[in-house]
Image 1 (cartoon, rainbow, N blue to C red):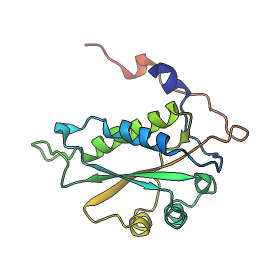
Image 2: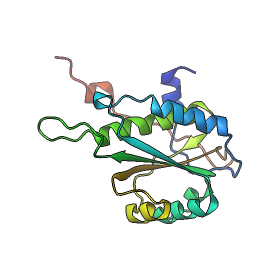
Image 3: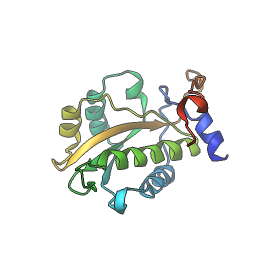
Length: 170
């Protein structure tokens, strides 16, 4: 599948099968994430792969949604402010770098025939405490990952602005 088709077909999945995700697929997703570009190549990110049942319960408390609890695993993307590049005016590019790596996770997950949803509306304090994230890291996104429950899940129609609305050639 080419990139444009992958982008058209990927969507935020909110229905997962309980089927375990193979280690090779998890490794592939993480390898794709680690290849993401970052400002000055500082790579200010860290990943937590949560498969342990007790740890999963802590992650689930940080975002209390029924569908979220169905996922067989989670990847938490954190940024490390001490490692991120700062522009002369003080702009910290850690969030930008974390967003790029997060999108790599989304696309690699879809390429492997799995589903995910980019979750940002979690309770950071609960997440930090439940999985022991150190103070120098900040959780940016949580990705529930698993096989899509095709009986319950349907890709929504993508509604996007036209190029004319968002582009100016000068």
